[in-house]
Length: 188
Ligand SMILES: [Zn+2]
Picture 1: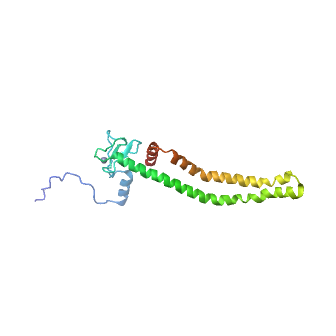
Picture 2 (picture 1 turned 30 degrees about the vertical axis):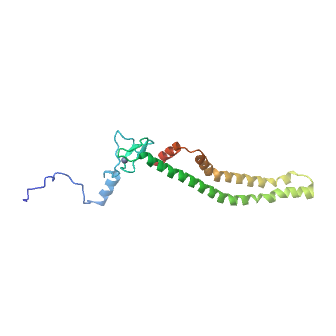
Picture 3 (picture 1 turned 180 degrees about the vertical axis):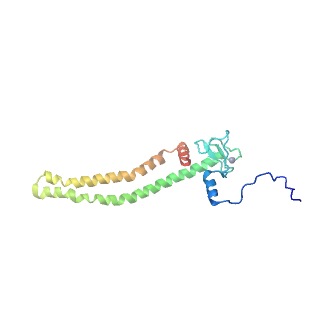
């Protein structure tokens, strides 16, 4: 082979293998000029990735319509979706149980806190029995801390139990559509 003989494919530009500068590399990465390797194909015959009617095939990694039973590669999409649903269902139940346990642990000290109100309730009663014979305005003022303690306790209780109420509502009322909606929100 002489100096002027080149292989037939010499005109084909090959991808750059040598790094010119680390700054250029990071610029290319950020600017997205390096082709993505996700392999997801978006053409007019497929849904837009991430939309509510889209599913990524676990076999060929292509975006496919959620309502199709089978991917174009032959993979059983309906089964894949059902598997996802079972995992999601198990998760919401375990999260619910976790919230329930957490609330029990949080409310236990709160119940003890209500005991603080007892002395304030007893004082006017004892006063009325032994000294006055009837309730006066000043003895009724002893009820003020009771109201404050009960009010703060009720507020804290409703605040802590809000996530559990939402979770109970979900666990008791979910359908397959709830799963599809949540699945979409998760992938956004
Ligand atoms: Zn496929």
